[in-house]
Image (cartoon, rainbow, N blue to C red; front, side):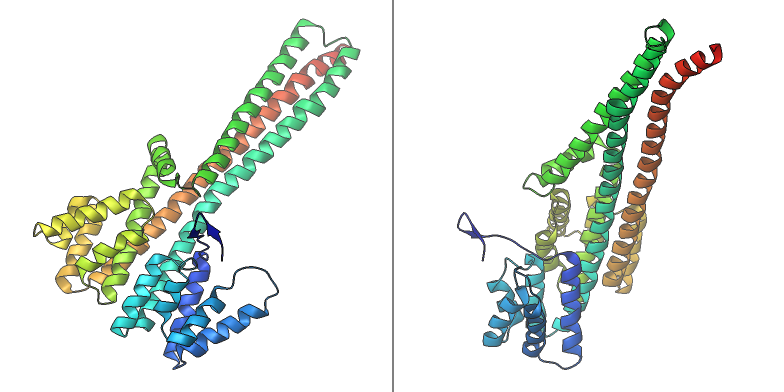
Length: 356
């Protein structure tokens, strides 16, 4: 077990792995299999893998075999599992609805995985394209252009006024774009590193202030997560007050946490849940009206899940839209720069050939 500064180092599985685990536990419980036998089967499969990675299922089985409680096992190995999942498993065991909660958790982490994958794609693809752009322009400037320069000088063009000006323009354009794209790539890498550190909150806040599209996407992402968490808790029979109290444990951005706290404070002032949500600005007006209808008809959990799905789709569409803008922009920039570099060489050469 990894220890850093006297504390256990978190090594939580990916959203996809967590979703799969929850789904498997739910299937085991629905089939009548005991929790001990089910986790033992997962641990056996895990031990067959010839790798040195941590075995969370094996650690889980050791405690479940002794106590019979999945919550206690997760609590004793909390470095392997999200705090939110641990608390929800505790609720499931206390209320006898562990199967339902594991089904809901599977859907929740599946949604989180899709959003995370879309976000990674939105960052990675332009980053790879930017690196390719730097490499291509760099090769042209360092290898190709000097060869043409020597050829033109041998023909007596390099020293002429027009030839020299054209080649200088092409070279300077290439270097300017190379430096600019290089800085953008370096900044993107630094941001990706910061997002994995304790400075994640400040980094996101900076990006939101710098790029309005990022601010809109993060707001929709926050709304999706809050709606998904509250929908899960309400469908599990959790009182709204307790659900709002627990929700911040599963949220990663401070803005969402503050909105949830605001809703709690408003409800303490005898505001209804729907009115408090409307005042918080968490959802758009249209979705606030959906929530009011759901509350009036007794279908709040279903409406919350629907709102979470809507915002998730909007986040994915927004990321796809950003990619659709960045990709042609980089391709167009690459075409213009390469064209300028080649023209700065080919036009003087064409002049020499036409005079022969």
